[in-house]
Amino acid sequence: MGAMRIVRIPGVFVPRSDTWLLAGHLQRQPQVNGAVADVCTGSGALAIAAARAGATSVTAIDVSRRALASARINARLNGVRVRTRRSSLLAALPGERFDLIVSNPPYLPSDDPEPPRGSGRHIDAGPDGRAFVDRLIAQAPSHLRPGGLLIVTHSSVNDEHATLDRMESAGLEARVLERRRGPLGPLLAARAPMLQARGLLAAGAAEEDLLIVAGTA
Image (cartoon, rainbow, N blue to C red; front, side, top):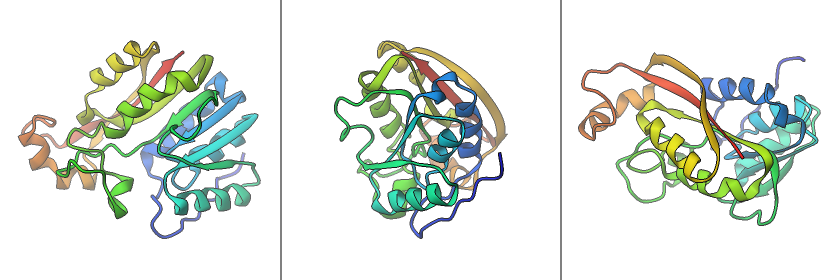
């Protein structure tokens, strides 16, 4: 399988290391051979990874029209079929069920309690960074087929135990697939004083864990 080709429309999130780490995990899950939904698709990289791994159908979902246009362009560049849907997470897909739901949602804690606008939509996720992942965990069970899998990524500053607990409460069997330790990214590093003041980051901490978390229906 050759390298993925990705072009970006201005205003669309650029795939980073967490995207590619998640792509590697989703390609190894048996559920990828069924119907796959990529929520908060951005450039479409995860949707394309699923299609290249043998998914029978792939739906790329985003609230941004530019992101969906980018996903369509990149799917064509990579010779795969991807359906696009404009939706706030899974809200606009009532009754649809998938074998695998994958998402690299915004997870950066923000000073602003209001929904982000502009470029902030790519990264900001409320005061604790959980605005999107909590909603996705709540919505996912009704959109998963029996044995289906929800797989998401976020930072250790977002409270992994809350994610595992919420998945279990939603009826999903939760587990951490990977924990990768590394230096704070530039965005988190710039907000370190705010994160430390809120108790989301230890004083003087210069590292975070990048987590891949899965929940099975």
